[in-house]
Amino acid sequence: QVQLVESGGGLVQAGGSLRLSCAASVSIFTFNRMGWFRQPPGKQRESVAGITYGGSTNYADSVKGRFTISRDNKNTLYLQMSSLQPEDTAVYYCNAHARALYGGNDYWGQGTQVTVSS
Image (cartoon, helix red, strand yellow):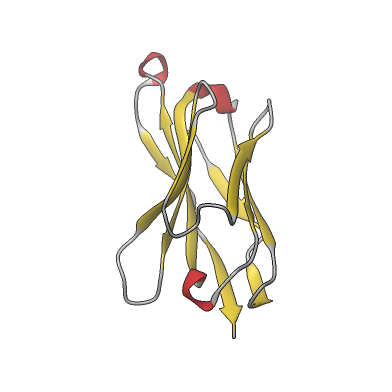
């Protein structure tokens, strides 16, 4: 069973930075796509950033230039968040979509809270 475990959330002042990590129980190359989503209070979950098997990245317009998604060559996905604003407050979730070779299933972490104070 694939597991994703996020860490690195917390309380930070506006303008500050945080780095989120997502540790997978399998090699990240099991997945053809990994990404970060967030769910602000009272709102729907939204995509923040993604990275493909080949390393291509994409970002929501609201975080471009402030957030950077990356991965190591083992089992960890990262989200470096800078210039944080109160509107970035949300529960952040790691998502991974397995390659067809490995079943093609979608996996989610349990989420980590990020709170940005003004």
